[in-house]
Length: 431
Image (cartoon, rainbow, N blue to C red):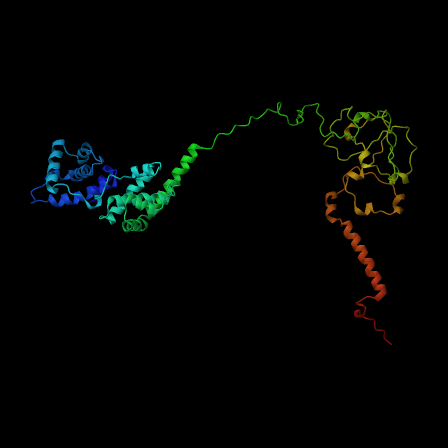
């Protein structure tokens, strides 16, 4: 049978038994309608496949192919179709039972679905019909009842239908199927239907996923989100919008610029490190929260400290006291003053550089008490290469370890002598 005829049968026949019997009738009718047989079709031979499909459906009495569908598929006029149908029926003779349809009691896949309480699936039916076509090709003498029941049992076991729990022995006994025929069909299914088995499993899994997604999980009550004003949680602090009056980077430890008295300042004096810090009276200076603080001038190169004493100013200190003065870091007050805004007509102020805000060399920190006599010179400029000093400083811990090691070396050398003393060249005195 040619490929166009096979394609036509697939389009017309939805059942495997109809397609198989139509293919057998086409081969038989083609032999019986050759020239000289007395049943020549001539120009009506184009309607042979469609007419054979209609005859097969009529003999099976399944209504798969109607007469009108066969006439349209044959591309013949109704009168020509009736003429060709009569020639083919007279050529093939009276219908005789086929081997693959004997012992058929009208059992179908649909009836088996109903008997075993399995929901009928179009995917399963389509795959079963494809499998049946292959089985009929390799087992033409097997009863159709055996083929249908075996394919149904095999399909349910492959798909692992939960409701189909019957065993093979019970299934064969209930449907009156011979075990040898059943084993023969199962062997064909295992060897010839591997691709269809994979397609069946894939399509069944896809259908199960689709059903699960369409059904979905039971809807859960959605939680109503409360607005921030109705939420019982702790309220967050509101952010203050920036404006001209907004004070940026205010520090409560530093007094405001307005706290400095406009009177003629005296020479400020720092307290010694050993002296406890003196608390200023609350009435002398207002708190920082009461007086607004102006932002510092970005162009200020150095931070100068000006302290307005709350009590009577002490007598002027000597140069030795100035050298040893240090101010606690938490109690200093910084007022940024631009050089261009210095007051005129007033006595010059003594500016003391805050050494805690600048990098100080290690040698200056570990200065001996003998350096107290030197006067601390105020610097109004940033030293050259000040940012490079940190790369040339030694770790204090390493210096301490080094001094300990040197002292230990000297002690061991005094006790045992230098280990390489004997290798030193000795001066030879000439006589």
